[in-house]
Image 1 (cartoon, rainbow, N blue to C red):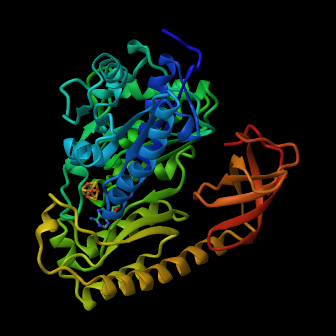
Image 2: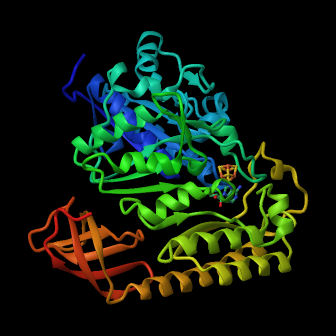
Length: 458
Ligand code: 5AD
Ligand code: SF4
């Protein structure tokens, strides 16, 4: 087994944070095979597009990227160098063989549940030269193939890292492809997650974001056979030395149990930030979306959570123009947003996803109407984001310094509420946690100055 990087891999990640995690794990799997990461596809022996299928545009983009990469591949081939193109992720899962049919230059197609087999796939390609499609949901668990017992280690990726703890979804919202691309809901065992967190602590990570499509439905098995909820898992991980901050995303209102609310309220390591999508504010749309809750139930839930965690930063997802959405339905969404108030949110125009229940609905909303509604909603959400940030003015909090700013000496960190905060470093470095005073706020970021040298803070 080679350990020096004699080959190069270029990985492009589309879409969600779980894809970011998956790309990092693919990289981890490739390091022992002698691959080092490059940011230049023209230098790469292996190019992986880790794709997203959640909305229409994301999938289209993959095909145009493949077109561009084909030119690079042909150019390399003419100078005697070969490169392989792999399409991974959710478009791969959804389209499978169709990708090779449309783009024969692609050598490998593999879904989110099979990338632990990458070494084996590369072997096969070398031996046979034919393209490979692996998009089944294998009986063996991908995560079992990614632990230290199978020779894999989580490598360092900065001071804040993602850890997938739950994957897949059984909710079947009518608009969503996730239950088809990521499969049934699955929780990783507790000991596996602990092992990964320990490895990341060793690699210098201080903040961990636990990922899952339905992360608060987590119910992983502990070593004594009992099941741990997400609240209990967060409590457990917070006791690991070196784990300074914990976050989790994405949660579903139906799975927001009291244990999790209690952990968020009482465990200082768990940050006061909650991403809890509602998607729409009209009961008839929520019903058509199969969200399994009403607008009022969501509003009541948020009131209960805020009672326990008054300084909570709430985030959400919204879809406008779901089939059949009337002007009144849309106004109901605006009313809900005004009542709930968000610190930050993501909003999208509905896009048809083949294979989903809503994909076949006839009463589609015209694009122009979707655009008008999205603009209105985003204006309101942006106003609320600015109002939330304004509350931080003259406040003090702890900041984890995560990355370099635009100019010399400037560092950017995240507040407990996930706001991006700019500071002048004065000898501090990425990975330090510092106490700051906020001097200036804008809609997308804050500026602050350090008031204490507090590398040990959390
Ligand atoms: N159209 C538009 N937005 C969608 N989302 C999921 N599926 C669709 C779709 N078909 C949004 C939802 C989800 C987020 C990840 O993407 O808001 O919460
Ligand atoms: Fe998709 Fe709904 Fe599952 Fe979220 S809860 S992943 S939106 S089906």
